[in-house]
Image (tube, rainbow, N blue to C red):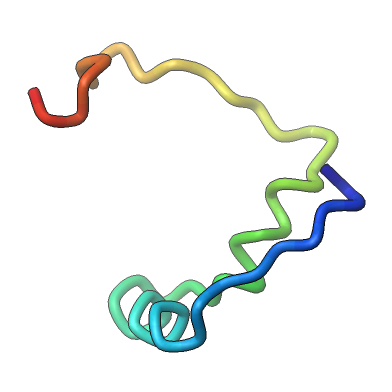
Length: 50
């Protein structure tokens, strides 16, 4: 994913920064993190609506 071109909507990015205190540009760095760990959350349903 290191060579991926990541784009986002500026208005949504501003809203996310205000709501969560995290810029999209910072959050996107995890996509190139070779040491990132991804695992399933057993407390969440497979369907987000449930």
